[in-house]
Amino acid sequence: MFEIIQVVAVCFVLLYILGLFTQDNSKVDIFWGLGFVLIAWGIYSSGTTMSASHWAVIALVSVWWFRLAYNITKKQLKHSAEDFRYAAWRKNWNYFYIRSFFQIHVLQFVLMCLVAIPILVMYSDAIAQNTLVLLVGFAVAVFGLAYETIADNQLANFIKTKKKAEILTSGLRKYHRYPQYFGESVFWMGVATIAAQVSLAWFIGAIAITLLVRYVSWVPILERRYQWDKAYEAYSQTTPVFIPKWF
Image (cartoon, rainbow, N blue to C red; front, side, top):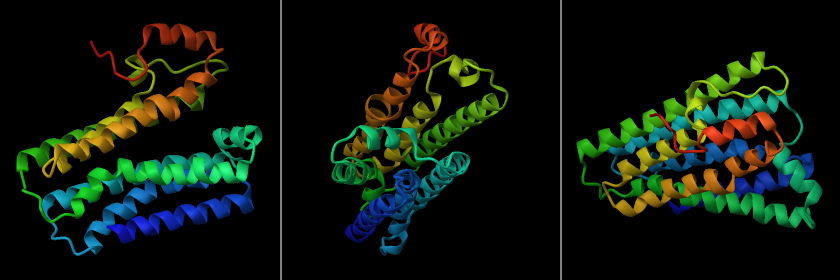
């Protein structure tokens, strides 16, 4: 387990160096998903006695990464410039090269290790296999993954015919403003449920990613981008941010 964490740490350092030469830190976003895949497949290479729970986690994380990598790669191929978040930080931060190392790369490495706790616990052979818990966790994770995939497809189709100043308020966004991040949270709750066969403490990873996307990372950043949009302001007054209002 510690060996794969070291490999992931080295990858973040290399990405930092790449960002120095290319003046683009966006590549770290692609590795965000790949890092989890490396950690997950490290279970198999570690010599751990594999069970259905181990394989379920590896399969779920691999499919999750494929979806994420596809979306991020497609975005970066379409927009060759550095992501707007990193570009803004590059412009506004003092001592950018030092700060970016710690606040972008080191911080993401720490967060990855925290979110990956439900995966890391699977390195243990001491899993009292509970088929019901496994099936529930797997079903919850698949639901979350399907939910965010549907949200992504609805947004992609909307963008193709979008008119100026128009915002998407239909589909899953009829019930909440950020269904993709809600689905992300549900996915990790499912993975954590499988890991709960060892200890309920491993829900800390799912809680961490939920708090991250809701209060630290994407949702607050996107909310600030729309703060002067009158149409979005009206939409936000009747539509929850994160928890869906299905009824």
